[in-house]
Length: 252
Ligand code: AMP
Image (cartoon, rainbow, N blue to C red):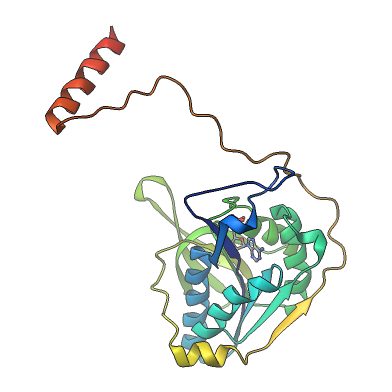
C-alpha cells in the first residue's frame, strides 16, 4: 500500500500587509508560514490507512522552495516515511495547474495506490490542484471526502455536499481523493518524533516540463472600503432598535 500525499506550506497573514513593488504578491516580510490545515488531515488519514493495512509507505510531496521543508518535516514527524520536494524558479508563484503538472511528473513515477490532496489551501483557496492532478494522472477522483473504507480493488468514500447531505461513492483503485478537514483527528508529533524527522529523507527534484502558465497574477490589492456603512454604538437594545428602524426605512 503506497499513498502519496500532496502537502503545501502555506503563508499566513499578520495584522499588517504590504505588497511587493510589482504589486503581484504580499511582501514576504509580512508573512508567517505553516502546514496547510487540510494537509494535516490528509496526512493523518494516509497514516491510519497504512497502519491498518500493516504495510506500505506514506510519501509526502510538496512543490516549494527550501522553506517548504519545515511543513514537510511536520508530516514526517507525524509518521510519514519520506518526502519529495519539487522546485525550480519557474514554480515561484505558480498557478494550480502548473503546480499539478510538477506534482504529476513525480507522482506518476511513484505509482501509488492512492493520492491524497487537501480540498483547498488556506492561502490561495484555489480548490483546484487536487482535481487537476487527478486529470493529469488519469485517475478517478472524489472531492471533499469525509470517510474512506477500503475494499478489494475498490474504495467506498463519503463526500460532503451542501446542507449536511452525504454522497457515498464507490471508486476503483488507484484513485485520488481531496480530503476535507474533520475526517479524523490529526496526531501531535512528539518532541522525539520531531527530532527523528530531521533524519528522514527529503529528495529534491527539478521538474522537466511545466508547459505554459495557466494564468498570471496582474495585481494583488486591498479593495477600497465602500461608502455607506453606518457603525452602530450603544446598548444591545439601542443597536437592535436602530437595526429595526433601518430595515423599515429600506423596505419602504
Ligand atoms: P489549492 O488548489 O491551492 O486550493 O490546494 C488544494 C490542495 O492541493 C492542497 O491541500 C494540497 O494538497 C495541494 N497543493 C496545492 N499547492 C501545493 C503545493 N505547492 N505543493 C503540494 N501540494 C499542493
